[in-house]
Image (cartoon, rainbow, N blue to C red; front, top):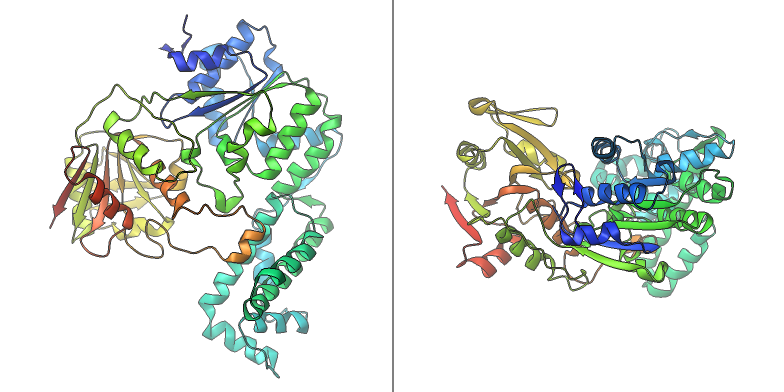
Length: 510
């Protein structure tokens, strides 16, 4: 007998997950497949059929918004309050239970330290000043301060890029659970595989990262503060003192797990000897830049032996035609786990490629044709929206107001922020063949590989997953806004594969 959740009857695949009593469950769920309802169904089954107390079940997801959404659905179905956490809120509870308290560092503290580090007025080390100059190939400076001031003017863009890379490196260093002594190993590694001139550049980068890291840690210690990654590390050490009884842990969006998060969960499962269910979709793993390690998802059965794998492959959001295109596109990356989604919903041309000469006029024409209520305009970058705004189309916060059809509920989001959300129709506005286009062509510096997992060898693997996320946000149609010249390789691929099909429609708005 299938479970009924929020007046919706779970399908056979969802029901198998709900009723599986295995200690470790690995649930591979496609976009729009009802994974949240499956989680609610699992909680209901644990309480009503396995007689597990509601306060012995905890749910973990990645954002406050997702936490509140899950809590509300549980409340509606069960009229019960189940503990739902972000990783960091769980960490704070574990720490506070050990009778210790810490302040949380300002999320922008690292950025402020980097900015101050590069401020010539307070540069307190002639040695470090020379390291910066040498990084930019200025080896023979007799007047380092004057040269540095010129550098800030002449290479302003390159200095800003260096700042961003240093911030990213340190954040990846932290969420990868590296220690201060690992810097010594990093220096040995780069010396072994780099040519002398390249080695020097990366050596100076590491020297800067090392010193900024020391400043960052010193500042937090002086103020008795922890950052998010510190919280997770300290919480792992305090798990042994955590008094809460736990029988079952459920983690949503597990494909976004970082190594430091994984270590906390593994320690908690081992210490409490509790069951664990993780739910995720490797097709939607899009946060490598912030420390997400997709290998933790792929290797779940290795880390938790005797686990049982389930697939939820029926989607209730998208049409069969759209998920056929999306699935073929993403599975060209051979490392993705194979799953074939199905849908009972059918639409002709759910994916429409719109070639334009006048972008602003083209988007107004698309909005004029849309008869639904809720629309997403998605950009690859935060600033993409400004390319379509006009007197008729205004931006207020994240809401887009179309004066002609003011009743439309139009929201602008980056694709990253759209994950987990859905709309009636979706418009994607950046398909330039450009560094900041889609796919994004900013090349990861080799130095980053020291603190992040190796990039997949398939071209633009994560950008492919981002494209998959973008086009599957729709219940109906996704519109791809494409210039008539210099357009994305993703669009050229769709042209090759679907020019004569009824899956993708190619239209010109002149």
